[in-house]
Image (cartoon, rainbow, N blue to C red; front, side):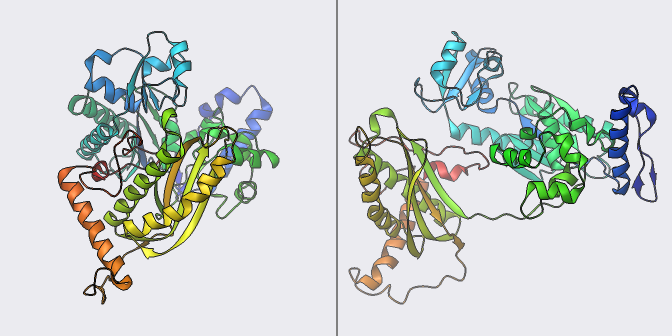
Length: 467
């Protein structure tokens, strides 16, 4: 294996053996030489990140909980219905071409022995917490990227290839031994977090891949642009318009030219990341809190939709209070059965975290959704409804209200009293379970069960399962 030599703090070109595959192709040899010459301007790029991706996570948890499912093709779905889609597929199911997003009816056609199990999101969060705790016994967790992805920064005494690989194997073995034998993972090790994630995707299941500085960027040229986090269909089209259809074409440009093709602020970041530079993370902050729900086919009429939207609003308001935020904007959105686009409407709010204020605003918005639905062929048939609280801000320096001692029916005192009632409901539900006390009807067969679910990029706190 070629080893980088350092002189005056710079990384030298690799040994000739690194370029051996290209020696028979003068044009390719010239291109690689130019790419490696570009690395001369870089400081040392040691292995700095270990990225762990749990394989077929939801399905693996189900197999861990139920031994009868082990070694069998399993998909996890919101409900056991052919009208929904798989949100996870076991390693065995993937061998039949089944993946996340495959309709259940199609998955059953692809595999006659398929087992469909309803999702149990609370269990997935419990296992996630146990996995993160196990990783902490080996190395500090720098960032939890999603329910099944964790990134850890390597220290100077951990970042040579052999030591980093041995650490990865200990983590993988620890998860299987102390959390669950069905929980396999793939690990990527690289100079920055983006490359470590790309490396973790290359070998599944149970893989271990290392990208060193001398592997970059040519080791990435067989990948597709869409394999890079942050490049979707829209960005892929933008890059294509600028003549970039492959990772190699992006890397061949100067950083400034690559950034211009990317567009936006700091557009050249991707070029440096693909060359192994470990750039600092850009800070992010929460801008909204919300929940959505796909309605079951028999609950897509006007009244079940209204009750579901109210339940989602109460859940979002409870979460808003628990995190110590207020909001200034309410958005009601949905998707009709006959339309792929989203319908939405919004209303400004006073800065609030009061469930009753939020419900009142929702009631004012709902007639607009009802009117839009009645104009559809076949009447009101809504497939998905969601409520989002936007323009959120932290509650700081909160003071008691001067109007709290007024008569409860006095308009000046009403929000003070209803906010106190909202907080009391939070405490009751936390102590006695979700929906121990709520606003409005829950029964009567008109309302879908609205539970906490795991979204991409956001892991619910266990507290949310009681809201």
